[in-house]
Amino acid sequence: MASTRPSHLIRTAAALAAAGLALAGCSAQPGTAATVNGTTISENEVDEATSEFIALTGQEDVTPVAVLNTLVEGELLDPIATEAGYAVSDAEVQQFFLEQASLGGAAQRPDVESEAFLDLGRYLLQYNEIYASPDAQAIFAEAETARQEADIEVNPRYAQTDDAGAFVPTVRDWIHQGEPVPTPAG
Picture (tube, helix red, strand yellow):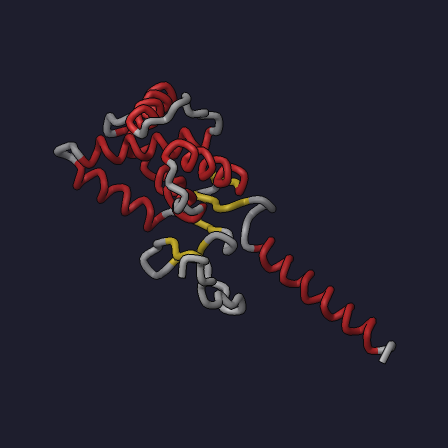
């Protein structure tokens, strides 16, 4: 039996190495969450923006997949919005976040440290301004065309894309979700 144990370990190690190579091959570089037309959005950027957004809003249910999708959309919308006259500066984004924190009753000033969090805020501001404008339909149609034509690669750790190009969180069929654990209250 001792002679089969080393071959079992070798097969397991080989399977893990192959899985690691397959996952690494899905992104341009290790640590990449997505690329949009050659621009990299790193896993660190997604994590930072997610953490900062949760800290600002208190919305614990915001997922990295939702943040990544917004960052991808922002990468595509920003040049179109800027060209249409809806450019938003970092100072405007920071002011927006301060206002949101104040409206939410935050006791302290939110930290706006990461560039990705600024990008997230920029998208939110641009989207809202465009949505309220008379040229919203044309700008959003141009953004949709840009999305359809974009070269977008998403790390499968975060999501897959469906036929329409929307992000669908990756589901691992081999991970059993199980039944919810009952709470002490019943």
